[in-house]
Image 1 (cartoon, rainbow, N blue to C red):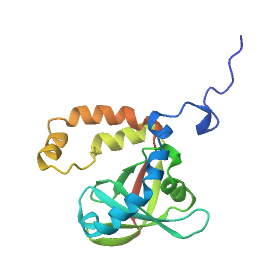
Image 2: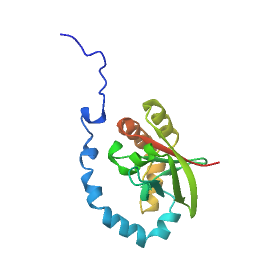
Image 3: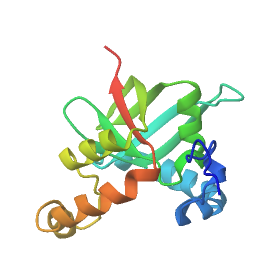
Amino acid sequence: MSLPSDPTPTSTFERKQPFAARLHFIPRSLRPVQNTLIRLLRRYFEQASGWVLVTTAGRKTGLPREVLLPCERTADELIVISTYEWRSDWIRNMRRNPQVQITAAGWRIAARAEIVEDVERKRTILAAHPFCVPAPFVALNFLTRTLLRPFAVAFLRRWVSNRPIVLIRPNS
């Protein structure tokens, strides 16, 4: 019995998709609700510390496309993880054109997105900056960032293996 010369799959769809990727139809069907919430709560999301509004250029039309994403902020960059791998429109738009606009902390800034696919680099980034989706309760945020941090980091290091991480840095 001979083994194939290259055991890695040639495309994302040849390997088994993670469970979350198979549920991608849910956020697409909820897009009108999300757009309404963003319109109604825009001022909140523009100021909230764990969220960012990212505007990309549509890969087919070139029209601006805005999406609300949870993020982790550092001194120089924003860290965003694509839950649905490459199925999310925003990440496919970024892959085509990495120039984006971000609205965070009340600022609207031109930025450049870097998609990280190297597993070890992703794990290093998450060990330094664990990605915790903000909860509406201060006590829960405190717990995930202090007492539960080792568990969150261990979970994220495994969870992020198949998902791209996006580093968004302001243009100089």
